[in-house]
Image 1 (cartoon, helix red, strand yellow):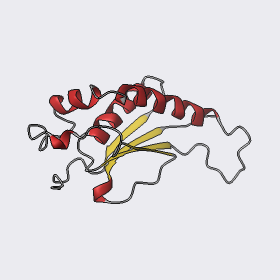
Image 2 (image 1 turned 90 degrees about the horizontal axis):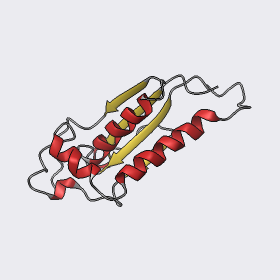
Image 3 (image 1 turned 60 degrees about the vertical axis):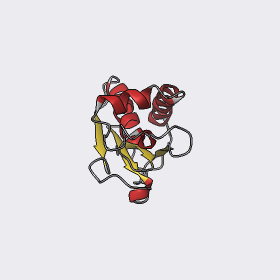
Length: 136
């Protein structure tokens, strides 16, 4: 059994509802938003200073590790899935933050990188990374 592939999707709640997923990680309330820093506000997860700031946030690396373990648990079961369940469909993990440009995209990148080391194909998508900064 097991997933034939894993999709990791980053998104911003301010740009719409989360995409359909098996697991959704909501980073909006628990981790400092780099958007509050004027130096990082108009950057995104493609910029090293943003990735460094997000990954240095207490708890973020532990969250990535825990999410990887959750994916492993989903991959193991269900052993007796009814025939109507598409067990070969990709397992999808959605990672969301406010705008989808900093926290979610960075965590999604790190999670996809970690999961990619398992040998299962991983597809990374950033739904809202290229969208304009949401001014609050």
